[in-house]
Length: 202
Image 1 (cartoon, rainbow, N blue to C red):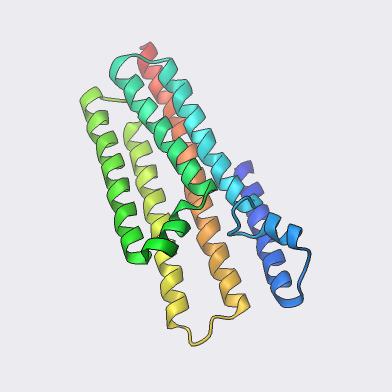
Image 2 (tube, helix red, strand yellow):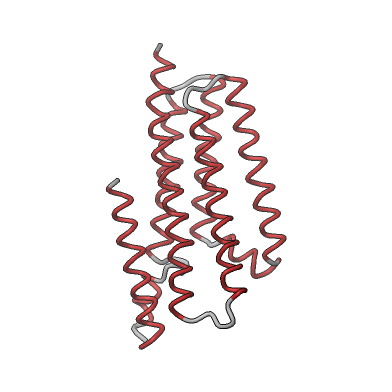
């Protein structure tokens, strides 16, 4: 809950700065630090940190388990690490710029589907406690991140003129919605940690 409040404050402040800088101009360093879409900006680093936390928690669980469940949780850790790297370097936006939105969406769906599919198969094979909730949280993040990106594109396309206020609002909704989905994943992994370790001890 505290992380969600902190994230809300960061993203709200970044949107205010983005809007004011767009109208009146401001210090370039301040705009880069708080721009909701900037690589290296606080909003993006916040979401990246959430994914790093997901990876750390998952790896800590894997280290205390054996055999199949250990492999499964290590896989969740790898997924969290990959999401953190993709977020901090803005991989999605970079691919969109070079390969186009449609191809980027297709590749993102394919990679997400493969990853979630492998985790689903592993969870069933090794009967991992709490795995279903984690898989659903990963699927939710995929839907939210890709869905909001698509909705933002549609909203901009149907407008005759996309003004500063509209662009700022759309960027806030897209990036903060993605951050909330990432926080949901982290909370789910932490909850599953209790189930997973309790099941191992029993």
